[in-house]
Image (cartoon, rainbow, N blue to C red; front, side):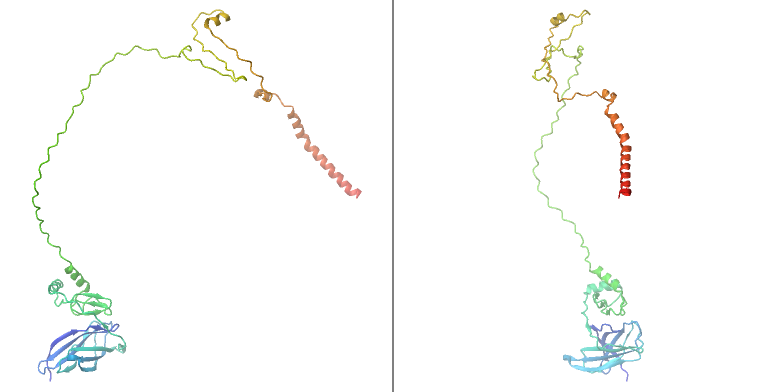
Length: 362
């Protein structure tokens, strides 16, 4: 007798098997319309790149207070599950009249044609619980993505990522698209980040500052005084002075006498009295006595200089030295000419004597 079953509850798996080509997705609890019996249906998804043909599992159903109601194995045969497709949701693995609170599923073997993958030894990994969005954020995200059922916050983990619909996609699936709701992970995350950004607060007009008390006016400063420029005096024109004779050589009479000191043995200086300028006078015969008496010029004779020292050589006149020929030059020239041949002759004679002596005397 056929009977229709209505879905009562649906729970997603909170663990997955790393490296498995099959992912345990969820468990559904159905209730018969006539008998009232509860049926357990399991949903699996092919996350590999090949078509799966069979799956073997082990399941355990628990009731109230954790009592095990059923523990058995189940086989899905004659499958043609292509990559990304789900299967098993139409096959009931257990039917009971009692209430079922939890179902534990362990993957055994999965088949792809003749190829078998054993999964019994792989340890299952528990998944973190998805984070629920607020009602306002859920509505905003659904409106932005134009989809329904966006109840959870998208999250990315080391071993996979959560979609906003609650589906977990392990890294073995290697996709950015949700196989249940069709959302793009990147677009979904960007939309959520945009919604989570705080909106810029509306700037309220700044209140006008209170009226400041009027301060007493400061006393007016004294105006700057502008002093007029000093009145310029009229330009005076001074007549030029008479031309003055250019200063000439000062007369010797007005200058001090200059003393010229000669180097003498007695170190007595010969004083030369300054000579006064001679007036222009007609040419006439020289009169020594009259001129001396007339102009008063007096010459003081100095003591005779000492004879030069014998050690002081008399300077030679360069012209005389060049003109006179030194007799030693002719002697040197003769020696240079005759000494080499004479020396050669003497050496040859000595060598000849030695040769004759060695040949005849010995």
